[in-house]
Image (cartoon, rainbow, N blue to C red; front, side, top):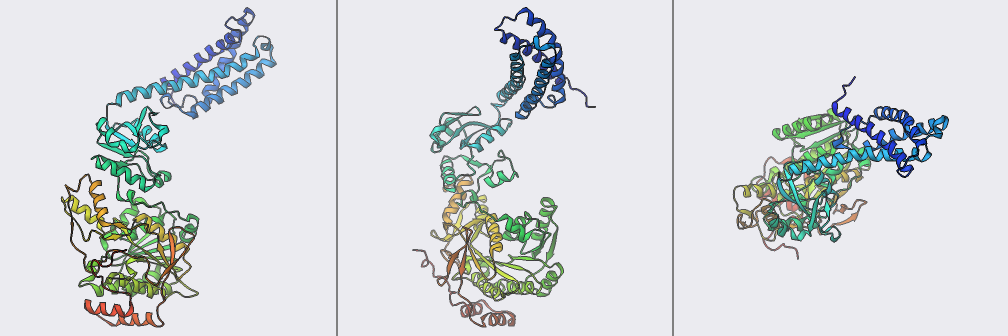
Length: 615
């Protein structure tokens, strides 16, 4: 038997006393403060009956399991239930005994109403007093902060922060005029978002928290620019998707990142369809240790595959991915395999041993300048021949769907990396047959934060004090976040019936110099602190990327962020001739690789610096 805590006993005694006072008060109110002597006797006799009944009901319905300091609606519901049960029982008892002549019916109605108010009111009054006391103790603690936004997220943030010693919210800012000067959890809405600099100076605040998880990227970007210009450190609440998933709390604020300013709307996935595609299936990802490959593995794990095969050449990347999944996804059965996609013997052994139903091919050499000089033949062998080899072995092993991760650089390629990926598209597409493995190709641009991309490089340059090097002031690229790219690859894999080239909606192109400026600002510096210098276009680099070639057009799909490119088909016999060229050479120099690529891909050309800017 659980011991009775003295606080529970005090709460019980409080309710007993309240029951006595309320019963007498009900008589008092019924007779307008002057109880006739006849009813006084009935009041005392009935008191000896109803109070024990009510006390037993209070204990039975668990009114003393909770803590008054955290009184909630559920406590009020238990009080209401306990009082109602006794009220009904007392009414039945009165009408079946002589008490019906001693107790007015009005008293039977007044008593439960007054008792609920007395017991519930005491608990909520104590909670309000206690929270005010704690707030009074902590209101001088913590870092002063302004919250940008006064919606539901801000309300939840204030509730969480009321018990925190880390942050002290001194004001809210919101563009809604109806909220101006109102109090939310005791904190005033001071003015519009545009006045953040004035209020930060007045309140002596150096930190602001953006509490607008569902706002458009345009609004978030404007708010961050205003706050950053004022020299404030900008934090944000978790994303709307994370809050909905329950993975994080609203109070887990973090530094604002480039992803928050990218201007991308959340991806709507066909979860039911992806469950049909992946759940209970063996799924394989080549290049699993890379940026896109590893994120694909994380996204796939949400759909509970029977087994997830990691195929990766880099031992350390594979080790890190294995450690992450053992820790974060222990329920997913994983197999970690070292292997090179160009090694057809190893690929064949793996595919026949594990028989995946779906294979995502993300392994590739992707660094444009590195593949342009001294490594052109390796780029073609890995990206073109390697892609064909794994696709051909997948078809022979009975893989149902093969998804090739391609790139916008395969469109009118100006570098060996892009040309090698276009060859991969042609070769893999040639494996598409009316019956058999379905080949789906997905083309997209750059992803923020991927290995070897500009963002990690810029961060390193900022950390070392600058300068940031940008090749050209007008160079632009399409960007999306790594999770968004992986999600759209999954959606394209689901929608693909075989032979399609899916083009992802990359939004508007972003100037790299603007990206650099954003990173400088988000790192707490100005362009006076971290300089930007222009180094000139590198080998194989063009000012802007294209998602479609001149002779391609797209068709819409049911998904707003996916379109199907109608690519120019390969000439009869061309895939076989390309394979014969790839398989018959041991090593070619860079110039010979480029000359031969122009034979297979007439659209391949080297860029002329400064002449390919979009009009």
